[in-house]
Image (cartoon, rainbow, N blue to C red; front, side, top):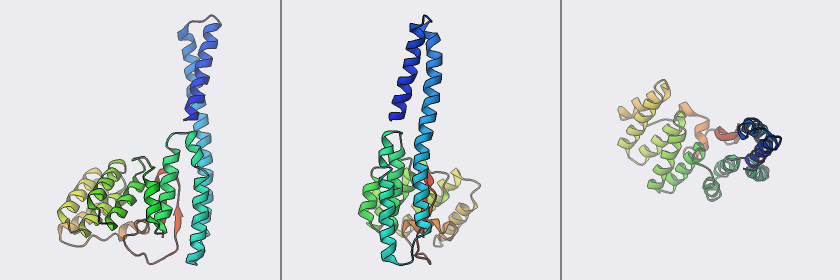
Amino acid sequence: MLNLVYALVAGVLVTIVVKVAGFSLIAGIVPGTIVFLGLYVVLARRTFMKVQGVMEQVKKEFEAMPPNPKEQKVRAEKVIKLLEGALPLGKEQFLVESEVQAQIGMIHHLFKNTDAAMAAFAKTAPRSYLARAMQGAIYFQRKDFEAMRKSFEEAVKHGKKDGMVWAAYAWCLQANRDVDGALKVLSRSVAENPSDEKLKTALSALQNDKKLKMKAWEPAWWQFGLETPPMQQPQFMGGGRRGRMRR
């Protein structure tokens, strides 16, 4: 938000200076707008570079994750503190706090701290669709199926091109014996992603009364905590809105 304010003030000042110099208001608006847009882009990029630097640190910490579960927990706490240190950047730029909270929630969820994960996910914007999908997975585990559907609907609305999110939604519905619901979700997913062969295969499996298998979306699928992965060491996958953890 501060980036927008600073850029707007600079643009207004330029406009006023040009007007005071004896030119028309229109003549001042043009350079004022250019300064506003240019400065905003520069400031926003600076903020996102700071966030990216934090994400790179987080990635390195996860890549060096020790095999001992106790040490993993200590490392995870360190990573969360790193991310929490980036939260003030949300005052500089829109959506930054939401994305950082999404990453914090994913890490909490990865280490089975679902209460802390849900608290973080509650502070994310709907566009953080992976956070919404994980939120839906937690509601599934808590048997709050109405809230689960609401979370997954938001997830597929904002992440309609991510086949794994659609498949996770359908998996939860089928696991809750709502096969018709799962079929409808996968039919919608194929309509949105007509070239996604993995979704087509999943839909075909359900249409033939088979259990939906998520192997096609491994290892990213394991981050939902709904099935036990063959490997237990968590790893971090990227940053930003599509940042993911995996096991």
